[in-house]
Amino acid sequence: MKEMLDVAVIGGGASGLCCGVEIKLHDRSVSVGIFEQLSRVGKKLITTGNGRCNITNRNISLDRYHGENTDFASFALNTYDNLYTENFFAELGIVFTYEEEKAFPYSLQASSVVDALRFSCEDLGIKTYTDTKITEITKKNNYFEIKSSADCFFAKTVVVATGLYSGGEKLGSNGSMFRILKQHGYDTSPVTPAIVQLKTDNKITKSLKGIKVNADVKLLFGGKTLKSDFGEVLFCDYGLSGPPIMQLSREVSRQKGEFVISLDIMPEYSFSSLCDLISFRVSTLRGRKLEEFFTGMLNKRVGQQIIKMSGKSLSDRVDSLTNSDIKNMVSIIKNWQFEVLGTTGFENSQVTAGGLKTSNFDDTTMMSKKEKGLFAIGEILDIDGDCGGFNLQWAWSSAFCASSGIINFLENL
Ligand SMILES: Cc1cc2nc3c(=O)[nH]c(=O)nc-3n(C[C@H](O)[C@H](O)[C@H](O)COP(=O)(O)OP(=O)(O)OC[C@H]3O[C@@H](n4cnc5c(N)ncnc54)[C@H](O)[C@@H]3O)c2cc1C
Image 1 (cartoon, rainbow, N blue to C red):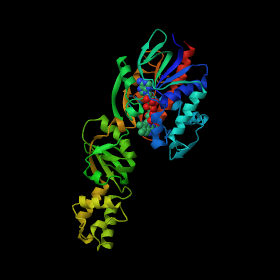
Image 2 (spheres, rainbow, N blue to C red):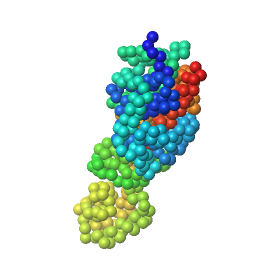
Image 3 (spheres, protein in one colour):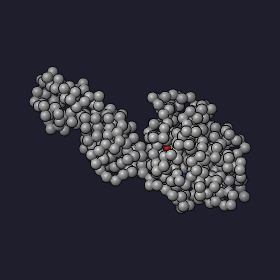
Image 4 (cartoon, protein in one colour):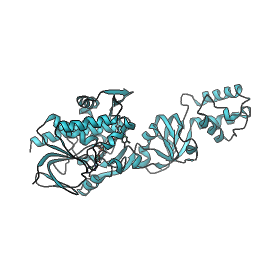
C-alpha cells in the first residue's frame, strides 16, 4: 500500500491551500497532500478582485452572509476573523492596503497571494498533486481511499475544498465533488449563481454600453423594494453590471417572479429639488437644443436618452419644455426602471449560493457528522457572502477552523 497521508486536501483553491498551510504551521509532523484537478493551484484566486484579490474586509459580520443557516458560520468567522487572516498572511509575507473596509495585498496582485500560499506549501513540505481530479472517495475502517482516474491515494482525513460552480470549468468550478458527496447521502440546498451581472430588457442598456453612473439601486419585487445598494452601475449589451447590481443579484436567482431594477442616478437630490434644478436650467439655457440640455449635469448620452424617454425630440428647443416634461424627466432620473430577465449564469458569477447543507457538519471543526474524518470547507458549504472580501474570508475562516479540528482529530485517533 502507498504512503498513508494524514490529510488529503481535495482542491488547491483558496480554502484548500490555506487549510494545508495552517495545519503545517501548527504541526510540522502532520503529512499533507493537496490534490488539484487543474495544471496549477489557485487559478481562481488569481482572478479575484479583478486580479487584485480582495482578501478580506474589516467589517466582517454575520449579516453579510447568506444560506439556510448562517449561524453555522458564526464560530468560524468570530474565532478566525479578519485580523486572524491578516496575521496569517502577514507571516506568509503579505503586506496589506485598504480601500475603505476592503483589504488587498499591498502589491495589488492576486498572484502574490497565490505565490505566498504556494511557496509556503513548498517550504512546509506539502505535496501538491496537480492535474489530479479526484473522482471517488471511499471510507474504509479508519482511513479513506481517494481515487483519481489514474491513481489511488490513502489518507486518515479528507478535506473537501473543491468549491462549486462559480467562474466555470476554466477555473475548476464544475461541482464534481458536490455530486459525489450528494451520492454519499449528504443533504444539499439548491445551487444558484450569486454576485453576478443581470440580464435586463437591453434596448437602452445596449445603446449606453460602457457608460457608468453612480446610482442608488433598488431591486423591486411585486412593486416593493426587496433590497437596495449604492455604487457604480455599468450599462452593458446584455443588461446591467457593477458592484451594486452584483450585490443585489442573489435574490434574482433564488426566487421565482418578476424583478425590476430601479436606478436613482441623482440620489443627492429630492424629487422637488431636482424639479427646481431643471426648471432653473430651462430658464438659463432656453435658446439651446434639447440635445445639449443636460451637458454639465449628466453623461451626454445618458442625458439624451432621458430626453428621448420623456417623449421629447433631441432637436426640440429647451424652451419647449413644460412642467409636465420636467416631471417626466425627473421621474426617470429618480426611478429609471429595467425589467430583469435573469442573471448571466454560473460562468460569470463570483460565488455559488446553496451547497452542502451545513446541518451535515460540525460548526466548530467543519467535520462531517456522517463520516468521521471527512471535512468540508469554503464555497461547497451552503454559506455565501456579499461582494467585498466576504467570500474569501469564509474560505479562510472555515479552513482555519477545519485545520484545528483535523489536528485534534488526528491526535485522538
Ligand atoms: C472572478 C471572481 C472574482 C472573485 N473575487 C473575489 C474577491 O475579490 N474577494 C472575495 O472575497 N471573493 C471573491 N471571489 C469568490 C472567491 O474566489 C471564492 O468564494 C473562493 O475562491 C472559494 O474558495 P474555495 O476554496 O471554496 O474554492 P475555489 O477557490 O474555487 O477552489 C476549489 C479548487 O478545487 C479544485 N477542484 C474542484 N473539483 C476537484 C476535484 N474533483 N479534484 C481535484 N480538484 C478539484 C478546483 O480546480 C479549484 O482549484 C471571486 C470569485 C470569482 C469567480
